[in-house]
Image 1 (cartoon, rainbow, N blue to C red):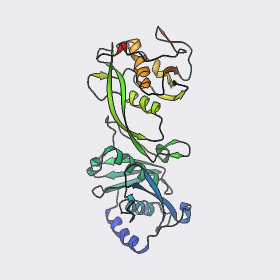
Image 2: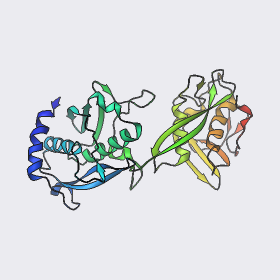
Image 3: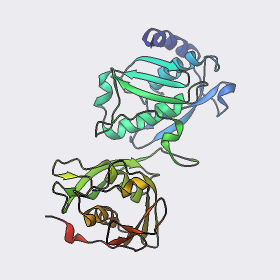
Image 4: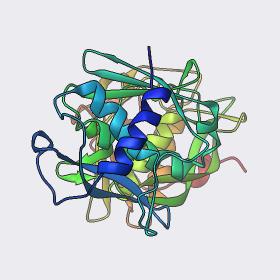
Length: 307
């Protein structure tokens, strides 16, 4: 591990003497983009920055950019990405993986700020030669999502939803999702307040949270564990959902229509969706279990919902 605290304070003196902004250039020419949070705390904004360090000195560049991300920009329209009470205790660079170790104050950030902070740090530091991906630790534990699952390795593409479109803006929504009850013979509805990138479609957002599972204890995921979403799109009111072959794994503790209508009813909560078709690896041939042909379009059915 490499402690950055002493080096950062030394570099602060250098910044006071020599830091200056410039127009956008290639990093190899001494410039990069620093990502700040806007004052409304809704998106990240890139600003050109001319590095003091040798841009081919990976270690020096990491220290310099980390310090800059912890320093006020001087512009009232921008917020520094790393809050004042959050510190980078250590970092380790192994091959192209940069691991950052934050103090526990990192966990005090609200969800929107944390996502934006994470995006700003990753998008800034992946510009450093030799750094291709990052992982965050809080003390000695990996940063985890709300379900306790490690966030894992992040790259610049982690915050890109479509080619050429970076995730800058975070929005809020309340989703109505349908999960199986504990007996597996009915659906129960659950409202989830979520924050999401403005680039992600609402149908994809619903499917991702449906696959992640319920937050309450009175429900369980109806979709077979490990199922992956391959694609989801909407055309003329019909939502087309493609899942991988894991979807065909049978859990007979959950009745057949409960699995299907967990997806159909959840997606039908979106105002632009009237019908849903589910495929496996894009294939609509065959029947799901015994009674649900995959080539049919299904409408919402609330008869399975338990009040």
